[in-house]
Structures are given as C-alpha cells and as structure tokens.
Image 1 (cartoon, rainbow, N blue to C red):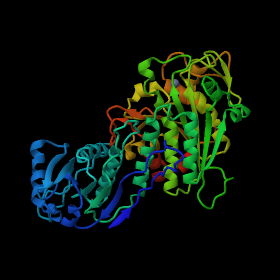
Image 2 (spheres, rainbow, N blue to C red; image 1 turned 180 degrees about the vertical axis):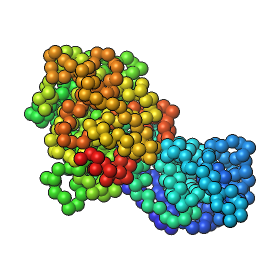
Image 3 (cartoon, protein in one colour; image 1 turned 120 degrees about the vertical axis):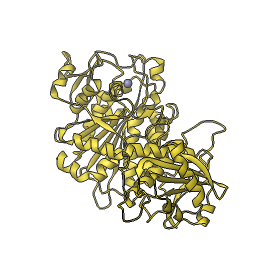
Image 4 (cartoon, rainbow, N blue to C red; image 1 turned 135 degrees about the vertical axis):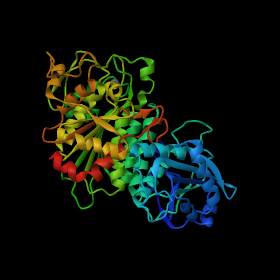
Length: 535
Ligand SMILES: [Zn+2]
C-alpha cells in the first residue's frame, strides 16, 4: 500500500477564511485487484475503454457483474456512466471512454487496434461525468479501477479521474447552519500496473480549489484587509516573504493608477501584496525567474459608471486573477520548484461615491505615464498598470498576469476558452499548445501596434480604453503592455473562463479555478521552449 499524503493548507487558527484542509487521501495498491481491497470501500468506480477484450475482466473480482454491465454499453449508448453492483452489494459506477478501443479480443497474433485517446479537455469532461455519478451516494471510501488501457493512457486516465474527484468532492464556502463537509475520506487506486507519482496532480487540485474557495467568498467576508491577513497567514505556512504595500506606501511610489481606483473605497485598506518564494540555495537578492501578477478586485460595482444589477451580481469574483496567481505560487512551492517566484496581487474594491474617480480624470502611474480615464469600470487595467510596472522593476525573466479583465473576451471566446496576449508573438503557438494539453484551453489575439490608435488621448499619454467596446480585450492588453518593460517577456491571460454556470471540463458549475493547471503545463512541460523563445 503506497500512501500519498495530500499537501494541505492548515489554518493556523488566526484565520477562519483559509480553505479547510482537504479531507481525503489517496492510497495506491498496484497489481491484481483483490476481494479484500474491494471489501474496504463503499463504492467502486471502474473506467475502461469503450471496447476491451473479455479476458481483461479476469483481473478484477466480480467479473460477471462487470462484464454484464460493460455489455450494456452497446444498448445504453456511450459516454453515460452505468450503475451496477459487485458481489450483489458494493455499488459500481462503470464509465467507458467513448471512442477508445484497446484491443478487439481476437487472438494475440493480431495487433491490437487502438484508437486515439480523446483530447485532454474531453477526457477531463468525461472524468467529471463519471465521478459525479460515483459521488452521488456520498461514499467515504471510493475504489478507482482504471482498467484495460495501455500503460501511458492508464496514467493519463487515472490523473483525470483524480482531478475530477478533487473538483467534485470539494465543497464551496457556505455560511449555513446545515452545511456539511464532503463525506469522502479515502480514494483507493486499485489495479494500476505501477504506482503513480501524483504530486503534481494533487498540487493542481489544491491550487484550483484555493482559487475556487477564495473567489467564491463574498466581498464582505473577503475584504481587502481580511485578504491581507489571509495572505500573511498563508505566507507564514508556506515560508514566503510577505510585504504589503498599503495606500501610504503606494502614494510614495506614485502608483496613481492603482490609487485612482482605491480612492472610492469606504476604508483605506487597499494595497498591493508581494509574496516571494525562493528555492533553497538562492539569495533573496537574485532577480526572480518568474513574476506572477493578479487582478484582485474584491468587488466591482463599475465605479462612477455603475453596472446594472445583473452585471454586478457576481462581481465578488473579480479578484479571481489574484487567486490564480496565488495558487500557482502555492503549487510551485509544493512541488519545490527551482524557479524563484515573485507574486504581486493588486487588491482593492471599485466603488462609487463622492471620492471615486471619474471620466476624463487624468491619472499618473508609477512609471510616469499619464492616463485619461474613459470608463471607471475599466478599473482592472488601472490597478494592473502600476502592479506590472512594480513587478517589472525586479527584472523577472518572465512575467505572467491573470485577470478577469474584459467582457469583450467572453463575447469573443465564450467561457470555454480564456484569451492570451503576449509581447513575444513567437510564444503564441506554445501558449495554445499548453492549453490543449492541460485541458484549460486558451486562444491568442492579435496585438499589432496600430491598435494603439484607438487609445490616443488629447489630454494624456494614453487613454484608459476606447469609448466603444470594440476589441476591448485587445486594447486592454495593448494598454497593459506599456507598463511591462520591453526586455521582459510577458503573457497576459484574460480569464474569460473563470466562472461558468454549466461547469468546464471536470469542474462542476461555478468558479472553475481555470489557469493553475494551464500555467503548470506551460512552466513545467515547456520550460525549455519558453526560455528559448522568450529570451
Ligand atoms: Zn470593472
């Protein structure tokens, strides 16, 4: 039995707003599945290719029941999980991956035919559906048997199932008397050829769930000051340096773009958080390999240009970008990344009121750029402008930012994809590939310099946005690029898929946690290419 303990975020008691520790653990028992192992669980999830040889069932006890279930697939259609029971009592969910065929069961002389696996996104979506069925009865101990796949696919499918379990066994914050935690305590991976290293998968689950937790918190619970306290508590746990640039400090830095947004708040508690992770053996003084920047608008009313109620309803989620940056930092820390990472979070509300900033105001950002305000609801690019400029001063080798920035990006892509923008065109293919491989899909937009014509101002160096909404996601990226040093490769992610009512991939409806798994794929699977192209 191999135990993989899940890295958990343990609240120190100072802060009730930290996400609760993950309540389940993963146990691996490779090799033949035994009756004893099945006797220890109260639900079994079996995932197979759509067609497998009859002989393949022999390594699982309860052969007949499973075989009978699998035969029903032809009649009951594909893709939908089927229910049965092992030994007449333990409930089983059988999910057969549509379109896959791992051998026809004909004599061994014939080369087994193998159809292509579905895309990573489709695999995650499938895993989400079968896991939803397996968790419906709220099991405490769940066995997962991924069976009949070739070796590399076995690992891929198992990880997808685990990601789906991490997504679906999670409970959103609730402030109700009767809210109860997930029943799931243990996941037993049975029958694998060999044990899997699940460190990264677990870090991806923790990361996405941290984003989901923080983003789902209402703005009166996660205020700028409680967010600051929470970051301090997390930094102590994780061993990060933590610095809070409050409004007075930002005034000294001439961060006028950030402060213009913050000036409408009821309390002067906005600020830019800086968290710093350095691998063992490196000095604090070394330039970071990576700067992560996130938009943390605690609540976005639109400001003086007030939103309507339906558009304002979910605006407590406008800090999602900051949660993604934080979760990426947490995941890299958990994986003991050799990269030195700075993480900058721009945290404020965007409110109305007598002090709030207005149209045609002229603001000076910390790099000296003057900005003419066109629409107060374009606050994200304002707070990011100063934050990117401050992050850029540390000369990171790469800068990534995350923001729920524009409605235009959602209109262009829907919530299925997020938009990516970069000051290194050569990276675009790689950015798309990392999206396809991780199942968190992204699409690039053009960023030719002539888009800047739409940001011309008679009053200031640049207009904050155009008065019409045309290609606002591109104009926002062009605006932000002014605050990124030219020598710094930069990728901006407009998180159109931060929130999706119908769910996305393995995620159920709500906050998706989109961006964490994507970034790990980009940094960990494509680090060398990234370096080559980005330099
Ligand atoms: Zn806004």
